[in-house]
Image (tube, rainbow, N blue to C red; front, side, top):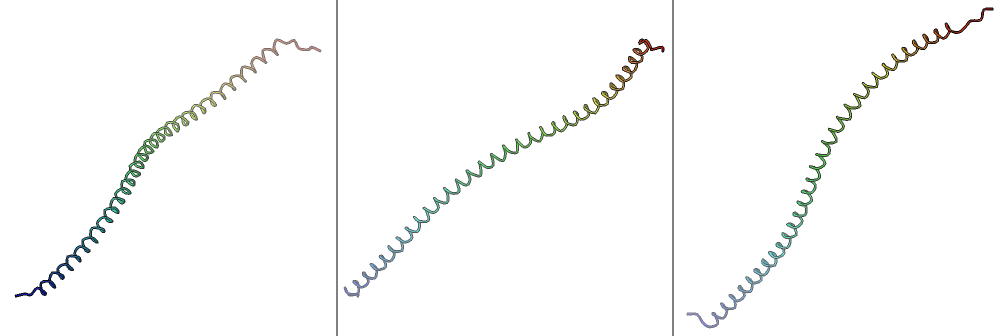
Length: 122
């Protein structure tokens, strides 16, 4: 059988093993707490980045809509300018015709005035 000394040695060995296991368990627990803290920090940072990205997506959508609207306005203005150029060309042509007509009429009026003015018969 085993003696008391052997049992005491065995108890001390077991106690030493238990203390070692406790130390390992404490280390694992402390590391888990640190990892949990780091994980929470990463989650918070990820949430902030996701929020910023969502905000940026909203801005991109708004800017895209504005860009489309401005594009449509630019197209309308381009058509208007082309129409104004066409109208201006027609007005210039009509003005030229009116000037020619006025010149003709003016010449006719001047002829009539000359015909009515007595001439010097010297």
